[in-house]
Length: 137
Image (cartoon, rainbow, N blue to C red; front, side, top):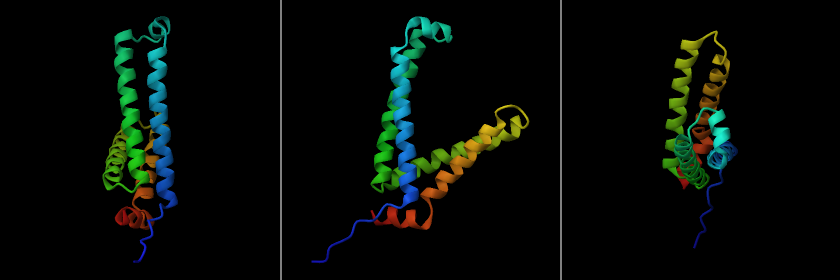
């Protein structure tokens, strides 16, 4: 019986997986920090305790979903690839709108960098080696 070699995950996909894990971890961490913040700290930031709780749990859930997407990407899941691609395309489109609308205003350069980052992520998920990896799994 011939053995089937598993598809080797290309470096570009691994970079996206690592970045996705970083986003997941920071989302969960941000949610936990907000949950643990004292009422005084929240009041100083202008956030009510009830709004902080909603934000915290939303951020934690978002982080868990993002972690699941990272796992899917690392395993060659096509839906995870599609989901990240759609999210990055939306980010790139919104960035383009922001840069056009806010050109010359502080923050337009950081928006431009964000958009270029989104395009880079898409290109890392859709190059020839990444295509072969997602097709093989």
